Length: 265
Image 1 (tube, one colour):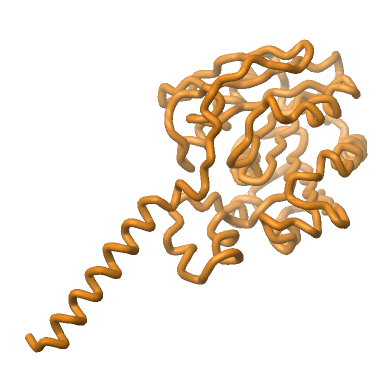
Image 2: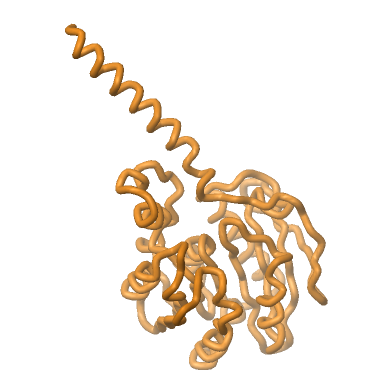
């Protein structure tokens, strides 16, 4: 083997090692868990523990709805924690609706470590808990924000509910990585949450709301997801809204209007 062949082989080995290391740590760019458990700071809300099928124990904040009102099964973003969403909870309960906000494994006092497989198990556990409490499929509105949109879309493709609400959603984490970094970035992503592959399996009304000034998830990804969704569906473009300002900017007005158009069967 010549000197240049040895040099080329060594360079290839270094690149392969670097690629492997980046791939191993790619999930650290996806999940940003706040690990401390915090007691509910919202009125008439309790913290419940929900067991997953693989033995994890999840923290969820729960407030029961008034009679005849829906319960939102809410999945948060990659750095979410329930204590910062007072404005969200207020807008939900002001109409008599309730919520179950499930915090993923490794988040807000839940056991375990986050992974794509694990988060999907967490979502199913939250849904099953509501069914065990006596809620019917038409009582449940599945709602996902940001990373939670991928969790919610997969769940809605597997479980029946009244509606699916996607707030600032992506087509896939790999697509977000490609938009922000390079074409190599998606190759490093193991947990991709490819909503683009699940959305056409969702058999319920779908509302997608996205801000056209979103600096985290490109607005075009929300549009693309809408194109792939089945009818009945609606897309709401919130002019000037960034990634985390949709609650402040009036998303729940659109949600109430959508649910009024699609009452329980």
